[in-house]
Length: 514
Image 1 (cartoon, helix red, strand yellow):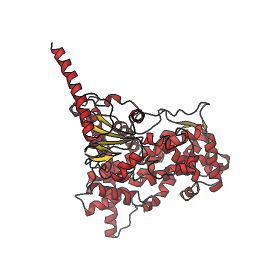
Image 2 (spheres, helix red, strand yellow):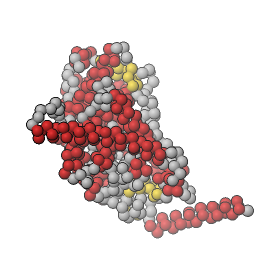
Image 3 (cartoon, helix red, strand yellow):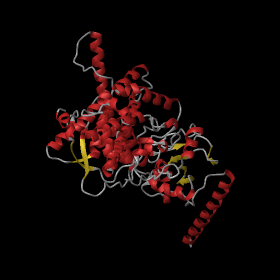
Image 4 (spheres, helix red, strand yellow):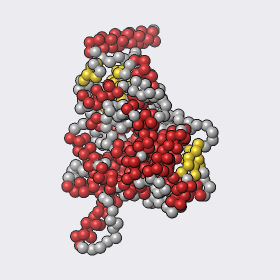
């Protein structure tokens, strides 16, 4: 009898829920929405990889869909015009972030740049990042760090080739390269490769970083079903707490180290005593410590750790994965690779590519743009949340709605791109490749668009161009490179890229002198 009553109550609840949903949509002119289950909402419709699952939903219900992930309303956008609506007219309304577990633990209780709400604190963090780390002048001052690390990678590859190692796994090499560039700018140290400082320190932090990336991309039911959060069914939150503590210990070690060096320099200056301190560009930690001296209550060590963590997390794997996708595409399209090589030979010649050469290599930039179009590392823009009611595409959107913009779907929209699933870099040489509007939003858009776009594009261009210039590349075996996508937060390859390579004869003398 009890079972019968339970089933009857559940059926009645589902029926009532369906009626209320239809009445609410009719009254408020809400966007179209699929049928949903009590409590779960539309969570049962989600499959991996998430961007493809959401594309399937959009293909059925339209470019604007209102979903419900448990108790959380979600607006799914998959067209350029609607994305423009969100990031222009409604940009301020959608400038907040939803409160997810990732933001709580890795976003320093929603105080870090990527996760804090829009307001004075966010504006100040953004200003610091733009002026002190990502401005054109700062990037230019650290150009030697980028060039040094790219050439170090090339030197290592040349040495391995001479030792009879014709196959290289590129994913780890690209990750090490981008990590060293970012850490060189942040802390003035190398943390990957034979020249890394304190190898044990390097291995420890490298392990932490990879674990954080894996856990940060894990879906957590507690984000959408609050009554499950306290249960922590898969132990995700427990892992987040542990990794946050371990990464904090490492970042604090760096801060304390720089503070000791700064104190030593200040004392030597006041006492007019010469000490052996290398004269080099001030690192980002040095800049933040200087700001701490003027406003210690605001620029706390916790705030500095949050800034460092945000930049390392946002700047390392993103650029490395773009390079891996680009090289995979070039190995599958040798005609494109040969055209890029010819451009480099014409404009650079038998010397190593430099940053000053990048402006003369339009086809190389076309390759990178087409890679970002087909394989945007962030296939879904980091979630936004509406601070008040708004109108998007003529529909009412309630306050507190989480916004998901499907970059992957927009970049492959046949209404915007001819043969959208094909790799055609030349499309960016003509009108089709115009970036007017939001046809290309690999770095987001609006107030909360990625501020590191310039640094990322420069790093990818210099690295990819140098590898094409210096080596002949081939696939391992006759089959094409597997382009299957992974399932994490970032768009990665299921199988890390391996390739055959050998030094180009025109560059042999240059490489042997590195």
